[in-house]
Amino acid sequence: MKKLYGVIGDPISHSMSPDMHNDAFQALGIQAHYQPFHVKEADLPKAVEGMKALGISGFNVTVPHKTAVMPLLDEVDPLAQAIGAVNTVVREQNRFIGYNTDGEGFLAGLMAEYDGDVLSKRILLVGAGGSARAIYYTLSQKGAQKIDIANRTAARAEELKKRCPYPVETVVLTMEEASNKLANYDIIIQTTSIGMSPHAESMPLSLDHIRSDAFVADIIYNPIETVLMKEARAHGASAQNGAKMLSFQGALAFEKWTGTMPDPSRMETIIYNKLGG
Ligand code: ATR
Image 1 (cartoon, protein in one colour):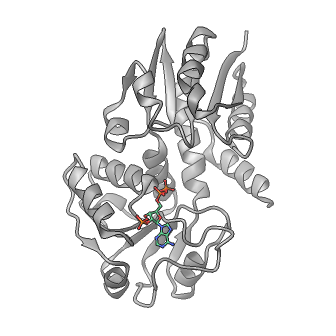
Image 2 (cartoon, rainbow, N blue to C red):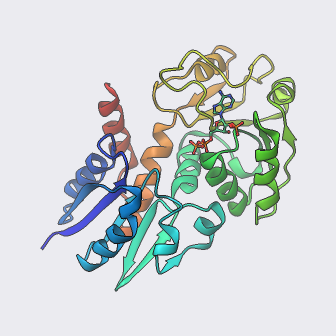
Image 3 (cartoon, rainbow, N blue to C red):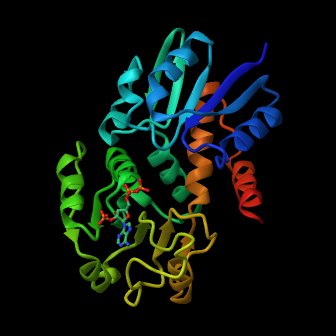
């Protein structure tokens, strides 16, 4: 009998995960199917209970359930606990264990393209929302030494810094301060929604002072190339979009479920095809 995996969220029809995972199951000859489930907020506890009763082998969790699902699980991994969000649930016998592969997916995607030791570099994190938290805590847990944070709302960045359970050197900056000091950074990680379609013409900060050997990782994948990425390249710097993070978070979830790491580039190709080539 095929094993069943899935993703819960609201909305869910836009999710690229079913195509990514079903392709990987097929490519690796694994007898399994991945199904999207549209779950409303009020139905979340019943849905998780139902997943267990039906013998579902594992599932992803997306917006708006990533935090609300945590108390419904039997165990939550310490990194996911620190991030305050679960995107991957693994079944072990009759227990559901929650993980967060968003930050690890980001790091793996960056390491796949960045020529150098990411963790020893001077990093600027732009934004202080949910995605920034996953990336900041994961990079700190893995041993990053220097991550400054620039955010529109300084209090949110201060809160992120204060609650980080892992040792890392961090200064909180305004966007303007970060722009002026940009030459200090090797890697700039963009996590805000600025530059995302339909507001694709904007940038969160000026890149006038970026170094030509710097690397910009924008977690936006729609558009495929943000104005920030274009601007970085115009200054001679390198840039990647969020398709790497999206494909690697999926690949790492798949690995947790099956013990086999799928080819992330196949998942990335599916993302690009879905985005229209
Ligand atoms: P996500 O889960 O995708 O990270 P989020 O938690 O809502 O989303 O965080 C959005 C991030 O984008 C925040 O850093 C937010 O800045 P604030 O903390 O000041 O709200 C940032 N952001 C969104 N719209 C913005 C805008 N118009 N100008 C500046 N920052 C913006």
